[in-house]
Image (cartoon, rainbow, N blue to C red; front, side, top):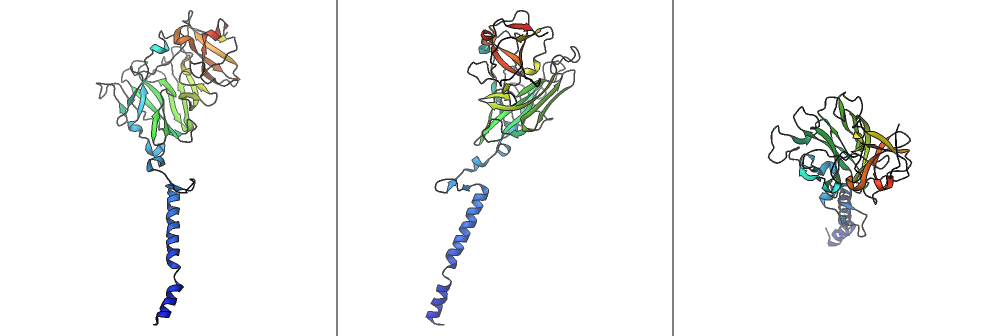
Amino acid sequence: MSTDSAGARSRRWWWITPAVITGLALLAASALYTTGVWSPGSSDNSARHSSSELLTVETGFDLENASFYLAPDNRPYYLFGDKYPFDLADRKKPQKVQLTDGVYYPPDASGNDPHMRIDPDNEPEYQDLDGDGNRDAIAVLEWVDGSDERYTSWKGAFIWLWSGDQATPVNDMAAWQWWNCPGDAVFDLQPYGYVHQDGDASCDGDEHGNVGETGLEHHTQVVDGTVVDRQHNAPVGNCGVFHTYEDDETYVIDTDLTPRVKPDRNADPVDEGFEELHLRLGPDPDRSLYGGWILARVIWPEGVPGCGWVHWDDIGDDLKPLH
């Protein structure tokens, strides 16, 4: 074989090596793009993301060992009417505590002592609850008291917002309900952030008929850290006990004012278009409670109730009995 013929064959196949290299490079780039490690969105087409940013709430959130907020006396505080002789500033604020293997015990408690656990009857749901494009977590935790006393055991729907590679617990619950009551009760977590409640919310059995019972379904979302119902941008978690006190009078606020999602004049207003605002009050309400704010029931035309904070300075004396 001559040197010339060997050179000709070499020149004939000179393109194979770069072609193979190019093909392999394209395959590698395709694999990176498919797995999400590389994307063409950056200016130099070489944006790379850490593996932690590829996590989702389903894969990165550990509910069994999640932190959450719980009041120091382990009870589901709610604010209602004129029934609680303490100011908001004096109220014991929930503290961050943590589940361990699905259970939280208060200090010096163990075994069958009262504790918080993941509710075995409700699976967690994952849905974007704050509008940032990331799915968040909502799950039901149950305070198990173990006694036969009323107003001890309860269930609550807790929310964790997912951002980056971590889940942050929301201070307020989406809903809660007394449990271990004499009457039947339902507390179900449903897809897309729905919480359905029904039954003996007042925990009094048949003693007062259906007074204090709930039949509510909240489509939950979080706005500026406040849990509200999507349908009317109204705060949730406090409305279900509005009729608990049967001996108190229900009044209609007979003036034009704007309920808020928080006891703050700068807080978001609830949706307009409601028909009436109701207060449930004893004979001599303390108007200084909660800094002058009181939680009113908001009635929309379709009959769906919600809640909103109103201030006594705006209400004045413009009240009339409902009936």
